[in-house]
Amino acid sequence: MKTSYFIQEYCHIQNGAIWRNGESLYSNGETDFKTFIKAAYKTLDLDYSKFFKMDHLSKLAFIASDLLLSSDTEKNTALVLSNRAASLDTDRKHQKSIENENGYYPSPAVFVYTLPNICLGEISIKHQLFSENAFFVFEQFQAAYLHDYASSLLDMGRAEKVLCGWVDMDDEKYDAFLYVVAKNGIFAHSKEKINQLYQTPWQI
Amino acid sequence: MADLKLELKEKIIEQLNLEDMSVDEIGDQDPLFGEGLGLDSIDALELIVMLDKDYGIKLADPKEGRQIFESVETMANYIEQHQTS
Image (cartoon, rainbow over all chains, first blue to last red; front, side):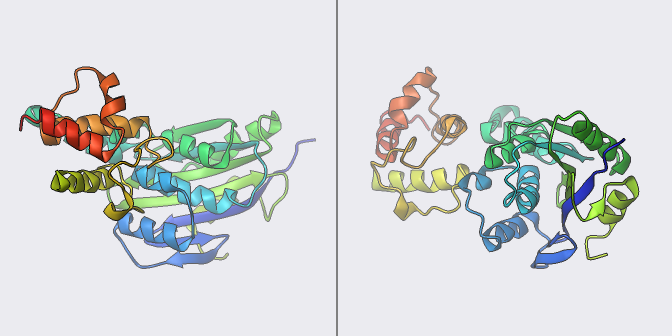
């Protein structure tokens, strides 16, 4: 008999606001990402000095994942994230630093973030995870793909839980929706429910 | 020399994103790596780029960095002795 899985928790970060499990957790109406995410970091009382060294995509993924993993003791939690812009936001910064032949000063600290899956490493380091991870780039949010991939990891016993979702960062446009799939939880793990939660940050 | 040390502290905070730190918290002889400011290998590369970009100093041998980047004071001494721009 096929095992049923559940969505245990979920969160959204978009338009200067943070929601967890449908409830507003933080909002400052700030549209500038750098200002917003720094204020969120302070308000959520996170203490992790390496946070300030991360690029914008990693900061977004880090805060979103921390909302769901900080109180979770399960270490066999796989990470399966996705987005549309890959690491384009940081790629542009790197490109700008090397486009002038007479001022060719690429920043090592920027360069190391020119891959989208680096944010998975940041999450793994913070939460001491040595688990499976994958980062996919899609045109748009793909609930079906994430559903099947997470179910497959759990079916094969490759993980006890899966942190899934979407973390997109492109210039000042940002959108994060993460959720945890486990053997128990509040919603059935279905493609329809994932899509519904993605589209509705507030309580449904 | 005091001006240069202050300038270096400001640059280190800004370019290495040490947002929770102020210049007053960095002593001239505080170790920059390890138990001091806790800088890492990527920060070391940033400091090498900073020497080149802001002071016109290219390190021929990156291993030299170990002594040069020991503290703000050792950096300032090195820059004073080698600055070309």
